[in-house]
Length: 46
Image (cartoon, rainbow, N blue to C red; front, side, top):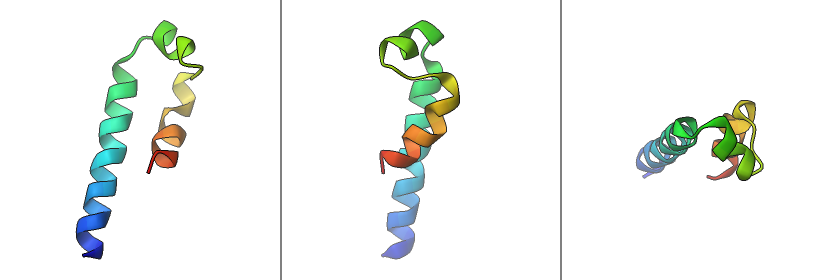
């Protein structure tokens, strides 16, 4: 079970990073995010 949970968390992290990474800097700014914060935000989303 732990392995499955870890895999799902990793996928959610990667999906979040990928989705935010596709946004332009202006779109990120509208959300109050700078590009350097994407990985940190993705980690907090779990």
